[in-house]
Length: 129
Image (cartoon, rainbow, N blue to C red; front, side, top):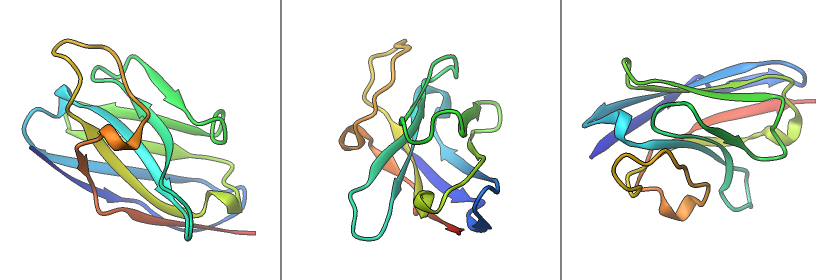
């Protein structure tokens, strides 16, 4: 099992940047593919970015490609999301999540939020216009 705690959210003007962090505690952080998701008021939680266990494979939602960068440091049990050129439509609660369901040794990742096993409490990101 793993516990996840996000930080780094806040209020920023359009065009600005934020860096979200997700601290993991518990067992075997490097055995999980990790994802970032977000949920705006009145909307479904949606995929933002994903990174596989080693950090060698990444993927992004089309809406954030070229602006957001996901990374991880397995030695520090940490996941990051660098967000640049922020837009008002990026306003949401951002969650990190761990996928424990991939086969041993897999280099894959999944983007479906329903397969993720562990979630943080979320951090609010608000982008003003």
